[in-house]
Image 1 (cartoon, rainbow, N blue to C red):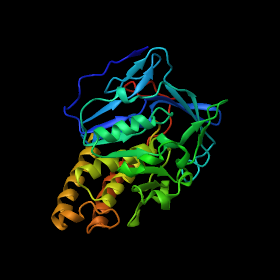
Image 2: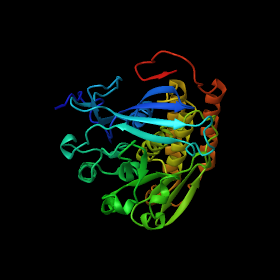
Image 3: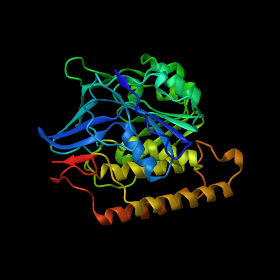
Image 4: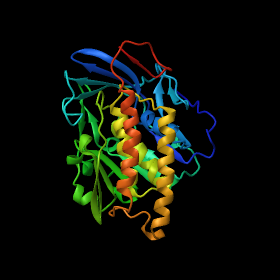
Length: 355
């Protein structure tokens, strides 16, 4: 049984459509649960969009056991459980943020169907499933109703061990989504996921973003590639960093930033995310500073290039280093406040609980 309890559209009309299930996330370190949090890429990207004032609509399914409040009410599937993940870490996180993490899906909600999507157009869409909930026909429908679609490869290639739910991957060519790549705006993958596709082949079909933790990210296109610098961060939990990267990138790119500048904004939000446990909370003062820097940079970029060059993927625009320095200054203000650290607290705003 499905209960469609969608709220009235916020900030109508929404510019963005986020598709992916909300989750229950448990972070386990040395056999001890150290955090419980609202999870799922949709929740992390929603946090970034809220912070950057991007109006959006989320299509997400949860079970009757869903434990958190969200800005937009998900579709409740009464006879299903909420998708749940357990992330197991050793005593320390490896340098790349993922090397010693074992992720297991212990419950899965129903998939999101084409009929679950709204019947109007969006400037862009985010296909960000985490538990196998996005089907090829659902992505096809997104491509029909969105002017551009940003896709996380985990939506396409994740499979799950039948016994214990350990997250595994299939090659992108075997995923059932490969034929849709020429219609995708950008495909994002982590350095751990990139080996499950032929980047040289895929970059000819759609631009590819590969994130690599403390090394920053690389943008691949048919015309070349760009290495985008990282931001330093005191890492506590890598969960959701790639999601917040993609949210920051998409928000920046669709607002008018050059690809390299948008990727830099994505790196910034990724660094802010790993400094916190669970779903991040961004200070309003810092968010306003970021929005001001983005608006200034967008105007500089428009004034300094011809219209045909504004969306060039493989060129580093003039002033990119100055933009990075301005964001480093903002990032430093966050570091002065000190990173979040694990501590015993009660649930905060219904979103997460550190134990």
